[in-house]
Length: 204
Image 1 (tube, one colour):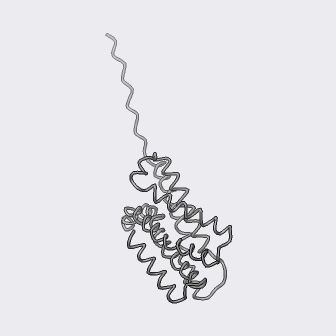
Image 2: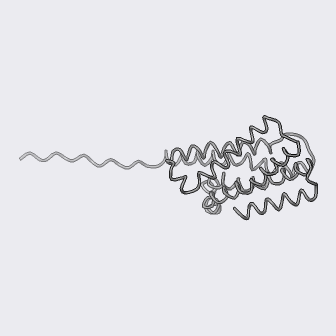
Image 3: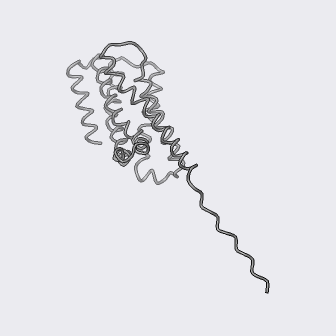
C-alpha cells in the first residue's frame, strides 16, 4: 500500500512539474494516476477469474487479490486528492460526473475498510459476496465508461485508450466466463450414489 501510494504521488508530482498546477496540469495528472490505479485494480478484479480459466500461471494474481485491491485503494487517494485540487482551483466537474465517480469512490473505500479482518468478521459470507459483486462491478463500470471512447483518433489516442479499454472490457468477460465454467463443473459433477436399501431379513 505504501509503495502504491508513493508511486502514484511521484507520478502526479512529475506530471504537475511538467504541465503546471493549473487545470491543464491537473487534468493530465488525473489522466495518469487514473490509469495507474486501474492497473492495480484489474488484478484484484479479474485475477481470480484468469486463474480459474487459464491455470497456475495466474495463481499469484488470485492469491494476492486482496493486496492488489488495497494497493489500488491506496494509490487512488492521490487521484482523489487531485480531484479536490481541481475543485479548489475552480474547475469543478459537472454534477453527474461528480456523483457517478463519487459513488465509485465510496465503493472503493468501503470495500477496502470491510476487507480488514476485524470488520470482515462481522459480515456473513453471503453479505460479503454481494457487497464485493456490487462494488467491484460498479468500479469496473466506472473505469470502462472513462476508457471506452469510440471515436477516431491517431496513434496517441490508440495508446492512451485502446489498451485500457481492452482490459476494462476483458475483465467482466473473464469473470462471466469463469462463472459459467463453475456452473458447468457443478452440473457435470457426479452425484454421490445413494446407499443401497437394506435387504429384508429372511423369514425363519
